[in-house]
Structures are given as structure tokens and as C-alpha cells.
Image (cartoon, rainbow over all chains, first blue to last red):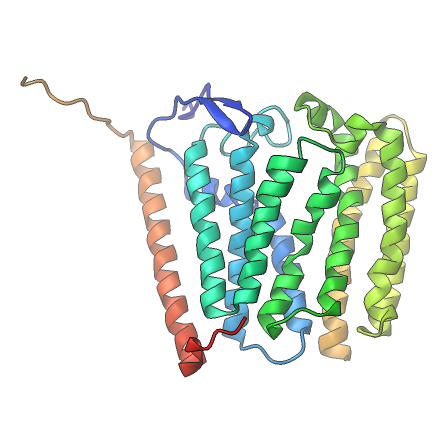
Length: 313
Length: 52
């Protein structure tokens, strides 16, 4: 079976030739458009924030808030894939996404993203909180316009600044639960914000050929692997006190503090291995290990924060 | 003048995927209606109170 859009050509976020016929897109293709793996991390960090926020939120309202945050993240993912279809087609990691494969037409992805985003923001505003809805709208805007359309192709600091979008879900959830924002969600924001560069640059180190082919100014492409390894280590070291900050500032208890310090030390250890192993297979393995551990790091930190607040506290 | 207008004829795969998409949209809309109904019951009159 040949895909509907076989031979589709993309240029700068727009489609250059449109050989699309009636769609063969399955529900699974649309689910893939929403970046479900990214969405799962967004939902988890938002869930923890919702659960540790002071006061009692009705489970149904909390579920609604999480659903809207998840759908909003999905909308941002779909709009990102719409805009980036041209570079996605050039990279091995992303070439099998639904638009480069020709299973979903760019216009369909654009409409899907806009409708999902509008519904997510509208429903969150009407049923939960307009502050949370405004933050969700800002997050989608920041991810799609500031990160995807502006910074991603412009500067090696793209994922540093763009990381703010991925850091906001706990703030949105906190606003949904309390109707306001305080220091605690800002600390959660900072943890994800400082976690993002070592996480993505570890991936970029092993995918440097992909990014170079797509002419994306990722740090390893522009500044080289050596500078990237240095920056990974710097951000990982900075992450240790930031990760422990909820405990240091008295918002979490010793269980969280000890876990954050141990996890932070392990993160630095993995970053140091990336710094020390610079050649061949060992370098790639070290980068892979840091990438994998960084996911575990964030999961453990937020899980223990929840246990610390709900079980111990 | 009597020429038959050209029509797109969907393949079996296109028909199947269109049906699956239609069902998914229907389920999503149904879930949205249910969500509004349940949240309205949960909130009661407070549904009209939407502070910033």
C-alpha cells in the first residue's frame, strides 16, 4: 500500500506540493500526532503538582484539569509536527511521524491542533479556572510560536528557552487546584527547566548527524560535542541544589531532600561520564545512559515529592 | 452535457479509516457532554462562579 501523500514535499513548515487524496489516517496516527510520550511526562508532573497543592480539589475537577492539560500538550505536539514536517522528514528519529509518512496531511494536523488547543483552553477555563486556562494557552503559544517557529531554527539555546513550555504544566495544575500561583510550583518549574538541557543535549549528542542534516542549530552541531558535554555537566551540577530546593526551603521533608540529593549526585555522575567518554561507542553509550537516567530522575523526584507530601507529611 | 461528474471513490482502507475516525470523534464529543454534565452536578450553582 502506498501512503496517500507519497512524494509530498515540505518547505519551511509549509507544504510545497500537495499530492494528498482522501485520508487513510487512523486514530492511531492522530494519537501519534499528540506526542503521547511527552504527554505522559506532562500529565505526571501536573498530577503531582495537583496532589501536593494545598486545599482539597474535587477529584472530578482535578481529573478535568489534568485532561485539559494533557489535551493542550497534545495540541502543542500536533502543531509542532505540522510546522516541523519539513525537518522531521530529514531526520531518522522523526521521519516516521504521520505527516512525513504522508498519512496525515499538514492541513489536517493544523486543524486538529487548533481545535484541540481551543477546546482544552476553553474547557479548562469554563469548568476549572481561567487563570489555569490562560497559563495553558500561554504554554501552547510558547511551545508552538516561540520554540517551534522561532527559536528552534535560530539558536543553539532553543531547548533551554523552549524548555519553559515543558516546565509550565505543574504551574498550570497548581493554579487549577488553588486558583493562584506561589513559590512551590515555581520550584517545580525550575526543576524541569534545568533538567531539560542535559536531557535533550544527551540525545542531541547521539543524533548530531540527524540535526546537521536538518540544519538545526542544536548545540553539538553549532558548538561541537566538547562544548555540549561541558554545558551538560554545568546544568547537571546546577540541578542538584535546584532539585533539593523544595526541601531546603522547607516545602518538603527529609525523604524528598535525601532522594533529591542522591538522584542529583547520580545525574552529575552520568554527566561526568559523558564528559569523560569522548570517543566512539563508549561516548554514545554514556550519552544514552544519561538520557535514560534523566527520565528516571524526573520521575523519581516527582514521585517522592508526592509520597513525601501525601504519605509522610 | 450528460457527462457523469467525476467522483472520488474511496478504497476499502480509506472507508475503514474514515469510519474509525468518525467513531473516535463521536466518542470524544460524547465524553465532552458527559464531562460537562458531571462537573455541573459536582459544582452545583458554583458552576456560575468562575473567579480568575
